[in-house]
Image 1 (cartoon, rainbow, N blue to C red):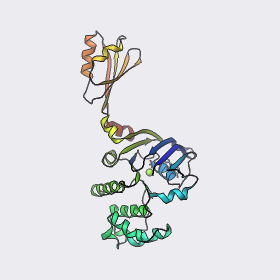
Image 2 (image 1 turned 90 degrees about the vertical axis):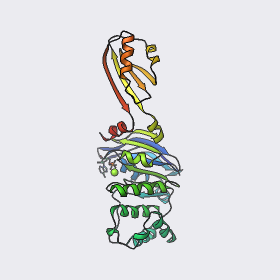
Image 3 (image 1 turned 90 degrees about the horizontal axis):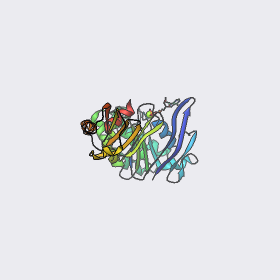
Image 4 (image 1 turned 180 degrees about the vertical axis):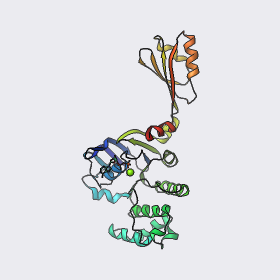
Length: 297
Ligand code: ADP
Ligand code: MG
């Protein structure tokens, strides 16, 4: 099933948590929802799952209007909330039976889910006896009991040790084979490891929404150069790997190269050739690293 978010805004009193957010996710995609703390990730997920209402905007799962028909939406969505609320004193199987009864799911689903998330050996233990990674599996098992086609996981790997992180990532990938998955994280590497697509939000706004492949391929270098006098754009044409030229003001130029090699010396040679003096020259590489810094700073 697909997810569509149209111009969603949400404030908590004077605190703006989401500012006109729109995106969509196609069936079968695994989407990383990346952003620093306070970016609005959990708020967006609570709206998507129909638990809170936005001030403005609309949300659809296929053609189900989540705001108007949250029960129908919840039938097709599995949700692992942040901090994974579990009943620690219950046994794993007992907890899943309890959840299945609440949500009127056939009991036969329970054993399937236990196996799918790798809890077979732990099913008779009390939840508080499990490691954090296994507790997270219990939360995921509870989220998929009703075999939802859309899975929304709020920071499923936060607080886990490195081995547990890898195991949960593998589980997300496995589940993503027949579900649309949106999961939040503040770890860029996680997105690289698991996702088809990445949406980066900060302060309630989307900064980037791209296929991971596009991001990885777009190794761009942006050079800003200031000459002492004006010049004609044609002089830049001989530079290799140049993808765009912009005359930002008077004698300032912004040159974008599809390369992460430092192109500044080429600009220097070009300036000499045309009798131009360089008054300013800076370069910036845009890749996953810089993107990551942009969101976390
Ligand atoms: P994230 O999950 O990306 O860390 P949240 O969606 O939890 O971000 O929060 C977004 C912003 O909204 C933050 O500034 C947070 O402090 C604020 N916020 C979240 N929930 C509430 C709430 N119930 N009441 C007031 N402010 C909130
Ligand atoms: Mg959160």
